[in-house]
Image (cartoon, rainbow, N blue to C red; front, side, top):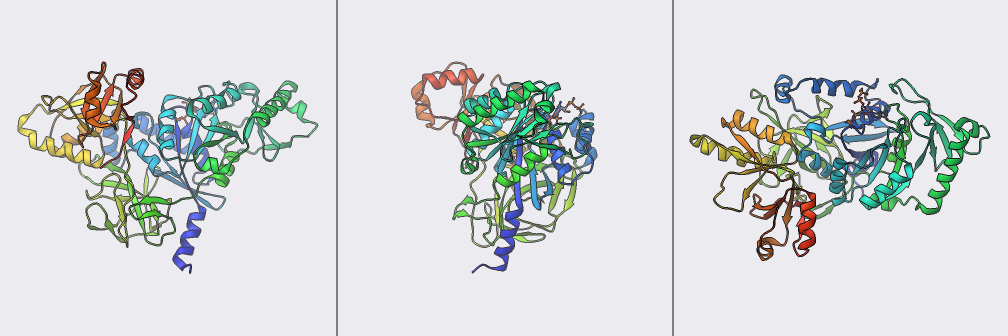
Amino acid sequence: MTTEVEIELEAAVERRRNFAIISHPDAGKTTLTEKLLLYGGAIHEAGAVKARRAQRKATSDWMEMEQQRGISITSTVLQFEYRNCQINLLDTPGHQDFSEDTYRTLAAADNAVMLIDAAKGLEAQTRKLFEVCRMRNLPIFTFINKLDRPGREPLELLDEIERELGLQTYAVNWPIGMGDRFKGVFDREKRQIHLFERTAHGSREAKDTIVELGDPRLEKLLDRDLYYQLKEDLEVLEEVGPALDVEKVHSGKMTPLFFGSAMTNFGVELFLNSFLDCALKPGSHNSTIGEIPPTYPDFSGFVFKLQANMDPKHRDRVAFVRVCTGKFEKDMTVNHARSGKTVRLSRPQKLFAQERESIEEAYPGDVIGLNNPGVFAIGDTIYIGQKLEYEGIPCFSPELFAYLKNPNPSKFKQFRKGVSELREEGAVQIMYSADESKRDPILAAVGQLQFEVVQFRLLNEYGVETHLDLLPYTVARWVASGWEALEKVGRLFNTVTVKDSWGRPVLLFKNEWNLQQVQADHPELQLNSSAPVV
Ligand code: G4P
């Protein structure tokens, strides 16, 4: 029998879509986010998100800014309504904020939007983020941006995605011309052409002019050569391209692909409509008591991100929880799986950009921010009812390494405590040299910001001044085959062996090329770019 709670949960899940944008800096993430919010009515004039970001950029010292504002550095989730759906856009910190949190956010997402600059194609950060999506078989929707500027051939871009990412593509729409001669896109399903009209930076919702494919005016509207080019491209697509297979999209094997121009707001609405039709709703999660559907009546969720307030006067932390099952209600008391304690969740927050807003309830697929009095760590499960724990969030391959030195021996205890607590919280990974004579901890981070945060917090919260000794490595791989396998291989050049916080062997390489060489020479070494937290 279906209970009232289950009916409520089903309706909430049915309306929810949650996604994160993966892209390289400058591809247009801020611009696209803004245009999406515009359609959702969350902002009324494009420019708001950007203005806020500009304010942030204007302050060179982010910590100073952090102190002034007294709140967290990055926004975490943007919520808006469109077509009666509630959309949660999880913000993936990029640029100077790029850190392990960027990867962790993807653990809380049900879908990803891969945003690509048409002139540049796939770029480094997008590739890395894609790999994390692939680990979870996330559905990926691709938006190829900046068609109003000269870019690469569309077929070439499709080919690059297929070849390099091993991801099948299905172009939902197809561009007609590019740059100065960008005329619009062809919607393959409806067989209509949306004509592009330049608006002033697309600050309002774009009004498309739609023309049917068979319309005799087309040859003239599009220019003869572009019209024939479109026909030719469509023939190629129909002949060699696969049909749209929603199951493959949902298992992350095929990406629906869209062309547009976020800045001029062109193609964004087409994209959003298709995305809503095809994206995954909040789904089941693996746990210690099996796979749990979102409609499971008891509330549960996991922590995917912790944010420390840098203001020493307000030393709170916010733990961001992805709601997996049941209904969250303000002031509810939940169980904390790792410690076995109960915690009352007062002052829950929803974050819209930088403004905190208190929330009363949340459903599967939503994200809530909890004031964290130090109980929560990344990957922790909170639940009501029968005990369960979700699979933890793994450690991701760091790219920056430095010995962390404490020059003042009298501060040894504080130093050790601080390092250990910051590690537990997930602010940074800590590794140690396999050479026992080198005792200093090695900070291992995905982004420079993580180093700054650790040093800043050690000084402010533990009273320890530290300095860093950078190491010349950029790639880390866990040796899944273990210490013995590593010893058998003997000395490896241009690499160093370290151990992670659990004593597992990790190889650090100077660059990707060195890694590939070792992999080719020693296929018996099973090298992984992530490792479970134990
Ligand atoms: P990011 O968050 O991914 O880093 O990118 P962001 O949106 O800030 O966009 C980076 C630059 O690319 C911006 O230019 C933005 O205006 C431009 N851009 C984004 N989408 C499009 C598009 O569809 N067409 C064109 N032609 N440009 C686009 P900027 O010069 O850095 O900033 P601004 O002066 O425009 O504010």
